Image (cartoon, rainbow, N blue to C red; front, side):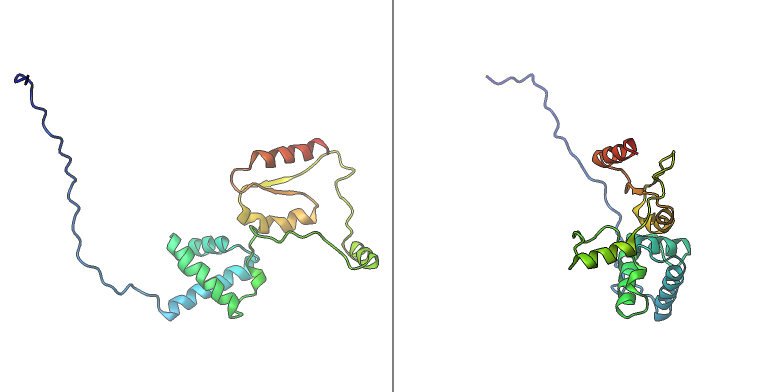
Length: 183
């Protein structure tokens, strides 16, 4: 039996707001002139001559702060990374002016002979500065990019540099606490 007293439920309509229409854009993007590119390259050389070694990201932020480029991911990837690769490959800047602290080779130190090991040990021997001190000192740093700036100082004074890269893992904190506990 059909219920004739039922009210009819209206259909839901979801209409999307109309997007504004834009005219066609030029296919040809604006390109920097050779002089503009050279100015950026010169700024990179100035920055690196003063602060090297630096990470690519550090160079990027220095260029942004000096107004040489805009603070965009496109400028970072399309300009800074690209030009630094070109400049290293063409010999404009030495490879060791750019640091990559996120990748390293893991290999145990080995020697061809006992005499070679003793010679290397003699060259690299360094007395532990803090062994007879009442206090234990560490420097903690959040940004990996700044490690290259601080490491020469902490190295000189035999102070551990602890880089957390933002949020340290529980394992990293645990190991650091164990080190401090046994000092």
